[in-house]
Length: 211
Figure 1 (spheres, rainbow, N blue to C red):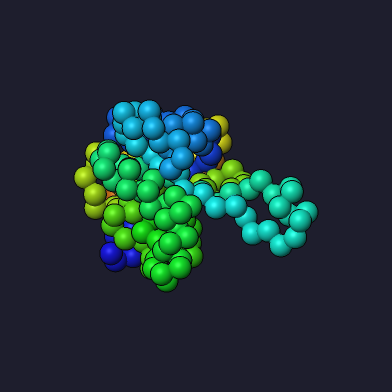
Figure 2 (figure 1 turned 135 degrees about the vertical axis):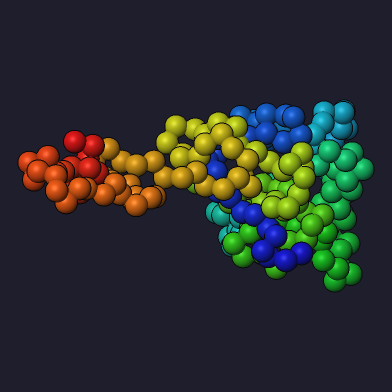
């Protein structure tokens, strides 16, 4: 799909968001709701489905393997049970190994949007990417999708700067700062009578400041 059709929005890991009627209170609740290929039994009735695909950070020596606990993470969202089961199958260790041996590309890889935009296809969307550390994660979705197939921010965590709006909504108009510059005139300012006494004339500054 075209890059122009892909919407990538950064949100805080404590932000609250909604997908297909279910509300998720941040990354930790998203993890708890997620399905892995190895524990999918008994959880496939809990719609919508979120399938987690993760990968351990690169390890180069025994110390890395002993201490590394960070994972790159993709959370694939869907309301289709068959799709959820397919993602679980195609991201299982055995299936991944077979694909690599045959030289085939994985259908549901971990994709950081910053570096993988050209690899993102419509069947991947929507998903949330988390780098494994830090306070931000990225929502990646089709900006032209039906609203019911999109992820919506419900409530931001303190200081995250997001409002309760769909990610596809335009940014709100900036609010005039109390001590900032006055707003621009949208219409021609009122004309003053040349014959009016100078003591009754107001300067443009007075008009703008509402004096």
